[in-house]
Image 1 (cartoon, rainbow, N blue to C red):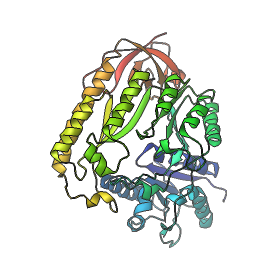
Image 2 (image 1 turned 180 degrees about the vertical axis):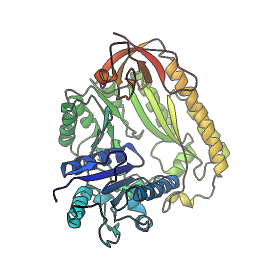
Image 3 (image 1 turned 120 degrees about the vertical axis):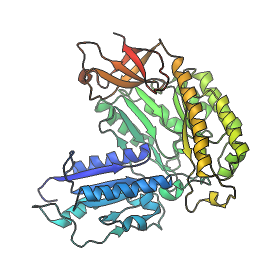
Length: 451
């Protein structure tokens, strides 16, 4: 590439997996001579990594693309991710978009960008590819490649992608169409990435993917074996497991985490509905009995564990009676927080064949009811630890004397540093703090540093 400095702007929507992938693209582009644009700078390249989990996500993607095109005139605009995989024509119709790359091409985004910049041959000004029509890649081929990714940026925590794709085909979900079949990196390669994080001074890694409990499809290995290998990486003091299907969260995994060196007492488990009938309509691979067993087993082995739960309201087939059944089940569980989503109809999904629909007003009302339960659960969980000592990993902060962080069991705290200490010297350190009282409306509680 010509001897000049190119600048890139990035915009990511959706899950932590997308952020990890964008971070990797940014690192590789930097190695190729394309640096991240600072605030106020006009970029030569714009990379948008999209999400398509809901119609709202689709709309946000289109808005983000148009905003970047306007903010960075003449930039090479490259769109990838799930929305690019599912609706490439809609993206290609947006003025200013140069390349639309699907999930199979995501691993070639960097080479494609560097090649396009080389073709420009411009060293004196920022300019678009002359009369270049928007190029779309084929969507007919199977998505088989695995793109290794590990995000860092300004985060204290790192997100390590261990798996991609899904074989489950739940009735409401387009993920298998957007990301392809389940596939993964090897344990050896993932351990090497964790070792690289440790060498950079990273202390906490979140293990992420689309269906991480299904790890091993392409290498013949197991998720439990991966956890055991990662636990042996010196320098990494904390691991967290991101969302894992309840039927894949085996008792063996729970028993290992309970006695492991570095795995935190923190789990995020998608339930989606507390009604067995709705779970059947969703084509989920478990029932409420299995889910309750997993939650209770976690609490038996790790009484202090934080348990977050995903739930969807207003899916097709969710009558008032079935919603009330789900609501009662959620109230009965010893969980810490709910992540509530309103059902959004996705083209091409089997859920569209289910006759009963829920109005937007009903979805909103149901969401509010479950969010109220979530608030009660979180406040109750936090209150248990008022006055107790817990280890906290202090995170990057722009403030000099106040820092935030999470305890081992995922209580979010805010710590006021005593005189003589600054955020720069305390950043990325695990310290002991004494937790204060849980405040009524806040998801963060005050804590004091114990010297």
